[in-house]
Length: 606
Image (cartoon, rainbow, N blue to C red; front, top):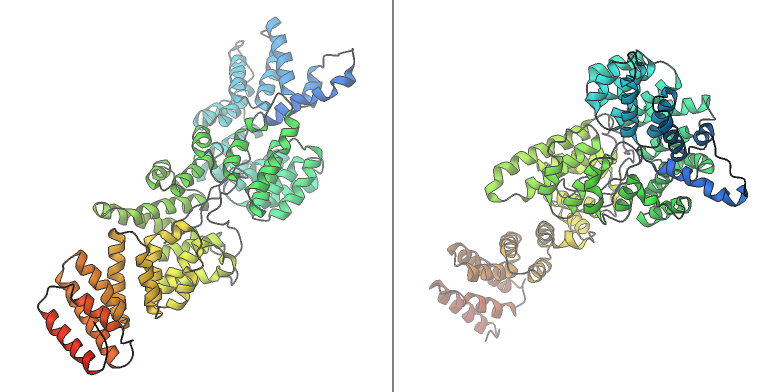
């Protein structure tokens, strides 16, 4: 049963979307199912948070006075100053390279500093020490491999370790990466009610776009552990994904009061501002990180921040920033696809997404948009390929629109509309578009689809009104827009406006096609004067006998309307001039007849 009012879980189609976690928000279909928007990101392992903490002691230098005390390891770790901890531990390592405890702490510090490769190397050194190393190192090394994206190796390494809760969590996440539903359910059943296991379960819900389930777990854990402030960030992250941006900001403020230098939290706040306001407002929020970076650092060192600055600035520097990120955050590749689509490079977009197996609604939508774009812009020689692309687009849109989680959302209903649009079932298109019209009236992409669909079902009045709402210059110059608007003008008795659309076009294949449309539609609607003008130009461009026959019939139609008093008599002069442009012997008979009537009725025709 379909709700009357859709849940608002989509963004505007021509805006860049922000990545606020480890999933993506991308596109809402446009132009017969073709449209796109970009996405920003937030949860990544990086050095920014540790680096800011490392610079914090600079503020206390003046108060320190002459007595400088070298902190011990516990103090460094308590301040999250992993740079200091690593420096101290590496110094100790030079004098005691085989000190197992020192190496364990060094691996720990490297991992939390965002250097999983160095942490892995340290655990490997520990495994090579002695004849019977602690098997737990295998599990800890597996965690490093997982963060490095080496999931197969992570699984193999974890299986060599002891059976622990950490091993279960690593294998649980590896199963998710492999899309192995069987293993995923097996390890799911092995999870306990411990905070760590429940956090792991919530993260998988989040990664699978089950944001409400993740929110429920995080909120329950937060009630049980008020001191765990970071849980507020996770709850805010989920609310942002559920499009409750105001609520997300309120919850996030609790964490930011204690940790104003958190790159993740500030970035999430910026993403919320991007959704609520615009890119400039979002970028202004990110600048607060610069205040904590100090003179020796820059908040733009964070890959996530650099990624989102591209989004906030409408795609600026996308080709410089996004390709090196290689899918971390995962939105990077998808946003690069969107950038190519918006730059008119659908085949470049296809290269990036052709091997992607979609797992989220946003990925299905974006893949459908790419296929639809190529399918609708293919050449005649590639017509068969175009049909296959359109079939793939229909399937992608239908999967999203028919899914239980998306069928009552704005993107879900637009996907179903796009699917039916590509199938040219416009009555069904309107059922879905009308259900989201109240949320999309100022959206050029929505007006494009709605205007064409209404015109295709014969409601030319609504079609004309809706198409005229479109402001985007690129849309208004597109032949598809011009041809549909011309048809609406003609069907609504405004043939002169359709002729003016032709006059504003350059002479090319599209203007020739528009002339044919104007000629035939005007003839059909009895607007014979403009039908004659269109057939006259067509005949001069291509001496096809069919164009002469069309001009002859239209000219006689004008003459008949003048005789009946339904057309100004002054039009006779133009009709005679257009008839004389043809060398067909029938012309003299028509001219003679018209001139005779004009003379008898006192009409001057020159």
